[in-house]
Image (cartoon, rainbow, N blue to C red; front, side):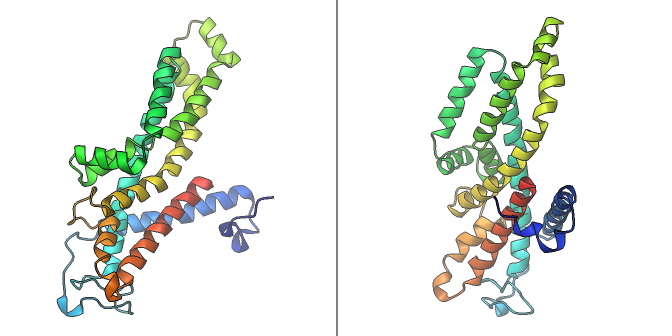
Length: 271
């Protein structure tokens, strides 16, 4: 038997499964929304104070300060909001691509062969390498990274949707619709799409953790967002120069915050 997740214990033990799911998604979504809204309200050009540079965590600066005296908590919050925006954009675009390819594969066996070939092609190339190439080709920055992540994360969802669409196409009610003269577009809109909406929604949520982690990784390597943009990948990349000086907080808190955001989206998708 599988162990009950930690977030479904204790306080939630008196609730039924539906109530637990709704409450967990509501609380998790609210936390993410607060992080995103607060981050978007922060000015990207944070004030510097060199008299307070490289200060460890304290009551005044709970995440410490960086080499320019900027508050790391505010920088992390701003970076998280940017990463969330890129992750959401990439996840949605990736899901749209996966859905379109799954429906294209159902047209005939030739289209299915082309889609299968595309899936095998993109699955054989390492994600990071392909993301870097696409990001560079599109000029990097937020747009380049978002499109690069989106163009590389549709493969697994396309496999699932393609198999589901092909199975639905063999059902009796689809065969009856064809006998009544209904076209493929009508069948796709009225029979197939309503049945795969749940897979599309969950797939979009589960793509997000991969999208946000790959965005941060590519930015960390210097192939993503510009250095002046307050992304988590930029913060982690810059912190590497100061770890030898004992400034552990420059990497620890942003990295932990990014991991928490990824886990929160994973919890929503799981529920």
